[in-house]
Image (cartoon, rainbow, N blue to C red; front, side, top):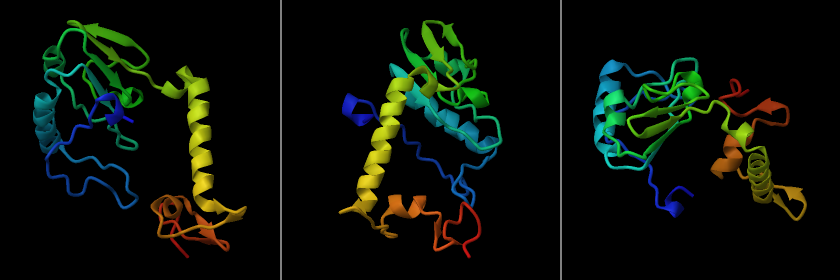
Length: 171
């Protein structure tokens, strides 16, 4: 969907071994890593019209990816949507649940974006649930293909036995 409207995901060529914990969640990596990340990010955001940030580390403040200097390097009229605002924000200028204007750039820091569009969030959730069930139900019978990544990652237990490592130790 992002690419269908002409946008692209930013990909930073940076060594990030150990970036995820054993459960697949992001892990804090240290100031050297984040300094290099900010340096690379600085080049990526120049000349763009919108930046959407989402970087979170469970239980920790959101990593700061966009400095004030980077924001000041954006074109007048650019918008930053910081979806990590509830954990401090990925942008140095983000203020949770506020819209900040800085030198012609608008920084939005929503902490509960789905609540601001409940009708559309409900539609999207309903479509996702329907697509999920269409994937596992055939002719009225549930068929869980453990090779299918969607089925495998949502399967918690089989026959009373936990089979998903993020929920608990498989028994």
